[in-house]
Length: 112
Length: 112
Image (tube, rainbow over the protein chains, first blue to last red):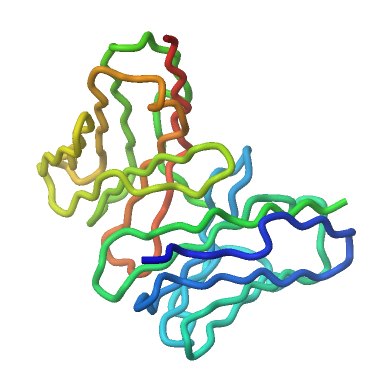
């Protein structure tokens, strides 16, 4: 079956702009989680969605937001970009009751 | 953000050697996962552990869920060049759901 698909793979934005990242989970998976990965901070949990509802949220500022659609696809938005937002953003999906995630290849965001 | 303590941070080993890495936490975990990440890709799940004391193998990989529920170990036997990558532990804290905390990673380099 197809894996988790993230688009775009690479993105360059300017400080102050906003960006939207997309994630299509594995077919049948209803839970989608987002993580930010940086060399210094490792993988940091952003939020998790299930059936269009946010069930858990990490410690990120309100500039980071997300949503999930009825087909389980999810988007993550970052407004007013800062240089420190440069990172690999990973999306992961799982089915209800299944332990562990399947990750996508990520979106590499560079803020200049 | 919260992270697990993972050691060692990096290691160089000769092909054919065995490798051990571990992960510790100050709090109790319900689930431990081990992932491997190759450059430019998202982490891939290697082994999942669900109860204290559990020992699980996946080919040359063996992982254990510590009896105190505050640690986990991953062993790789007879390492080969394709074992190169970053290994992450991840856990779900007791009393929390829908969120995994990741370790800081162990970067493994295998010398042929």
